[in-house]
Length: 227
Image (cartoon, helix red, strand yellow):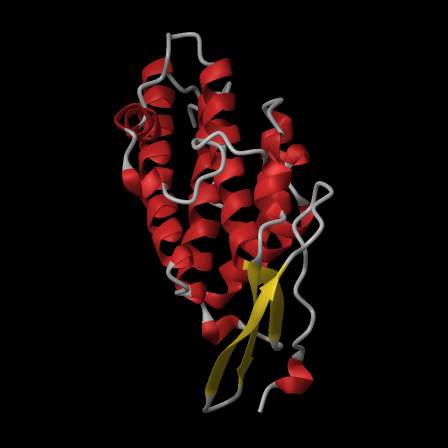
C-alpha cells in the first residue's frame, strides 16, 4: 500500500482541521463563558484534539493513522513526537487532565467508573485561549508557504467579538493578572449506573487563586457532597 502523501494533501487536510478546530473552540468559549460547562468542556477537548491533528498532518513524511481522541492522548503525543512536533510538552498538565476527562463525558455508555473533576471557569477559558493561540502560532512558524490564512487569523484581523470577549491574550492582559482574577469554581461528578445517569454541577463562590504556571484544581466539592 502506497503511504506517500503529497504537499497539497497535507495542506488541504491540515487547514481543514484548523477550521473545524476553530469552530469547536469558538463554540466552547461561548458555552463556558455562559456556564454551560459539560457542553463547553467536550467541545474544548475536541477543538484542541483537531489542532493537534492539524500539526501532525502538516508535518507528515508519509501517511499515518492519526484518528485518536483525547481518551488516547498518549497516542497523539507519540505521533507528534514522531513528526518532531510534540507541542503538548508546553501544555499545562492540569488543563490536559481536564480535557482527557471531558472526552469521556461524551460517551456515557463507556464510562466504567464515576468521573469527578473540578476547575475554575475563568482560568480554564484563559488556558484554552492560551493553548489555541500557541497552536496557531506554532502552525504559522513551521509552515514554509507564507502566512497561513486560518479562520482564527481572519477573526483576529476582524477583531471578532466572539473571539475577543474575555480573551486575555488578544486583549493584551498579563496572564498572571488574568488568572488571579476573582473566579467561580465548578465541581462535576458523573455517576453512571445500569439505568440512571446522574450529573450535577456545583457552583462555588468568587475565589482568588494564585497562578504559578498551572491552573488551580477545584476540590472544595467532592463526590461525598453529591446527593
